[in-house]
Figure: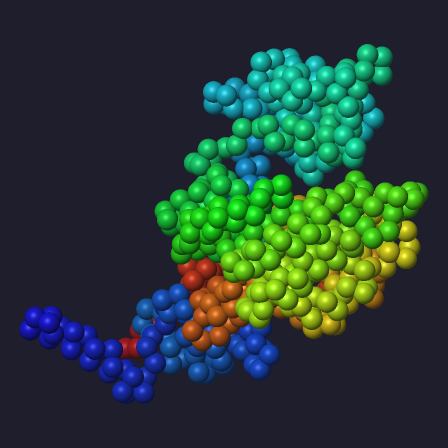
Length: 576
């Protein structure tokens, strides 16, 4: 080493060692004090102060101990009793794909028909060449009865394809151009589990499609380009950060999304940690694993990785496409829809498991759940012991005989717990299943009791991506407004369990438990500040609790205006 460099190296080393030799701690970038710090560590669950330096947690303890980390330039935040906890991990959502909704014509809360049609006319003038006119958020009740008609859209956009959806995308409204592109005419048959609304006199399609009818046109819509996908991700990430979410599993990521995520990560745009579940079409052969391996290489970045694979085993209960062990009520033989046979599923899961992918299966009905567990058990028997972190997502109906298998096989149970309340969707499910099976809808507490690892995802775009929304439902099993009694109340869980599911368990599933998911010295400062201590809040008002601040690796990615106004950090006073 040149003499000048050697001297500078020794001087730098000495300067770093001086405070350590003197017994002093190096000053932190920021220190939180006087808080209700929930660490999600069983040994020391609570503290009052946390220090952060260079994006890492450097101290967890009491206020007195935190004083050693406060220097002249340290930002000190007095939490005044407010709660500090790890950032939330949403283990099943669609941030980029669902985020494209922000780029569509926004029809939420607009008056039908005048305001809706005016908004669509305006949006039609702002489209690029070849782009479809897409609207989102049309009130579901507008589709009741006769519903909208294609002629209204034909006047607005006679030559350009148009697709307008409700919030839940269970029904869409299209124009004549879209029907022509899809080949839907008077002779086109209704799908088995969907409808094509028709004129009673002529049999011609009216332009309203429901359930599986939606899928006829959905796959024909030209995908957004990379730039728009990155804009969509920024919109979705901003919303997620505002709810305290710092990490997600992006389910069903196809090639174009994969490249857009990588570009966003390389550009330093990402304010979420994203684990992508690459999408596998089940009709593809086993050699499709090579594509997944290449995708995993593409998705290897700072805040983005693509080491999971997602596929659909069945559908949903209201549409009677969820795969069941016993027939739906009113039928002797309707067991729902199965997208793959057990032997083929076993082969796919075994191969992916052998290549160290995390398997991520969409399973809703009890037969699909059993098949998923069987396939993972088969892979374990063939491939032997290893660190595997497979998950079954949705698991809306589980046969009680299969509940202990999650713990025994080490399979992660990924619940979309916001579905565990009596709403119209669940009422349809109850009617389709009957009382005996209804008892085993969303049995999250029963799964917890076995010692299985439980995580939670919103499946956004859903009713809400807010983790506190789902946590309130999990604890109460009631709608947010309390309008219905508790649904299967014996499956209610505790706040501690839900926080664990949304933090350290989610981090473990994403293979990030050494980096995030709890408040421990050495981990990344993925932290959130809540306006009140959740353990002191009314269980029926948890969804109203505001997130005031979200940090990702110590960087502010969200700050609520109330925090800025009433609880702003202060700089520590100079020592002199």
